[in-house]
Image 1 (cartoon, rainbow, N blue to C red):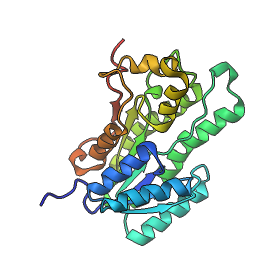
Image 2 (image 1 turned 135 degrees about the vertical axis):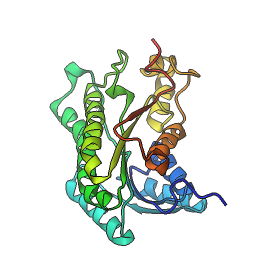
Image 3 (image 1 turned 45 degrees about the horizontal axis):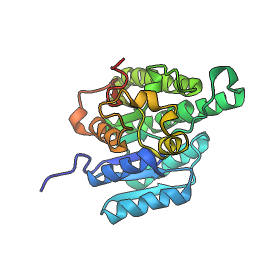
Image 4 (image 1 turned 90 degrees about the horizontal axis):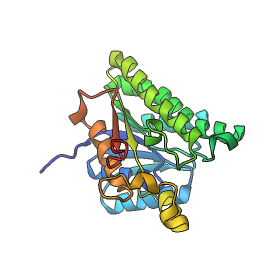
Length: 258
C-alpha cells in the first residue's frame, strides 16, 4: 500500500471553513496528515470536519478562533502541541482583506487588512516556531498574485501591501530558519474559483473586476482551489526537503502573459 505524502504529520491549518482552506484540509487529510484546523466561523468549520471525516480523514477544529488576536493564536498552537506532542507543518491559509481604491481606503480598512493578512501570519509563525524547530518542520504561507503584480481593474492596494509583505517575510524566515532546520515557503494564488470570486461573477458577469486577469489564464477561467492545495502539499511534504524561501505562483500563467 502506498503511504500518504503527509503520513504521520501534524498540520496546523488556518481558515478551514471554506474555499481553499476546506479543500486543503480535505487533501492533506487524504494524504495522511492529522489536520488541526481553526476558523472564525464554527458552523463552516464543522462542515469541513464532517466532510473530512466522511472521507476517512483525521481532523480537529477550533472555532471560533480570531487570528487577529495574538492570545487566540497562542492558545490554539499550545493546545495542539500539548495534544499531539509535535507540530510538523504550519499552513497559513486564512486571510480577511477589505478592498477599496487606494485614494479612498480608510485608515480603519487599511489597518484591518494588514492585521488580518500580515499580522496573523507573523504571530502564527512566531508562536509555532519553537515547535517546528524541535522537529525540523515547515511553514507554508499563502501569498497572492496581488503581492507581485499590480492590476488596473482591481482596487486592492491594502491587500497588495499585505500579501507583498507575506512574500518578503517568507524569504526572511527561510533565511533565519536554516539554523533551526525550518523550511519556509509561500504559494501565491491567482484568481481562484472561491466563493467571493464566484459571487463577483454572479453580480457583475463579464464586467467583474477580475475578468481581465482571468482572460490571461491558460483556460480563461478562475482556477480550481485544489491547484493551490496541491502546490501547498508539495511544499509541506518531504518531497520539498531542499526547497525553502520560494514563492510558487499558481495563477494559470496570468502574471507571465501580457
